[in-house]
Length: 241
Image 1: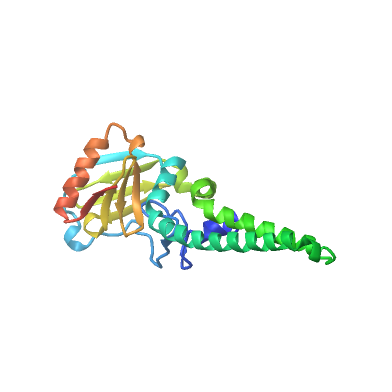
Image 2: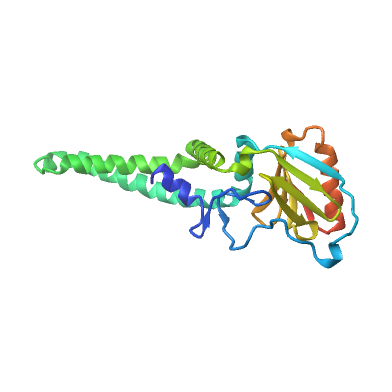
């Protein structure tokens, strides 16, 4: 398998990697859902004119390293599954390639008259090399390949190139980027995940509002407490990973 094939296999067949605008960052290996972005939606009648005051405003940027960590976290279940797959494939390739090569070398005297003996040896060596690459891909090559893929995504995604502003209210958060407004209500979120470096307000199991801690150093504790209050009020899970 080539490096690109392994990056493709890191995603299930029905899945793809993309970076959606605003509150819809999507992970590598995340299912693509046929739904419209929550852009400037009008609140239901019972939520219009509620008079709730803004509690906090965040201004930050998402760097390549933050984006990389996000994909490592959200893609971990897929990676664990595919490691087993690549181990089986790599093991078969190594056994077949090594066995075929040994056979060719042992039987060399009997086969040297054949014109294609050199090609057969080359194929056996290539099979052996591919097997070793499969066995070691996730340990030595995966992160580098993922970084290169995400670097290209970041360069092509205006959302990740601009400052993001998020206004936090008791009942919702409103995100501003590229002159557009994205509104989501706390009651509709899936859960909140907190790592050593990231806050992830999950809109679904794989889509989220991503806030790097290093971009809001003076507001980390305040935002963490705010999210804890939101999770309590709306009965959402807050998971530390």
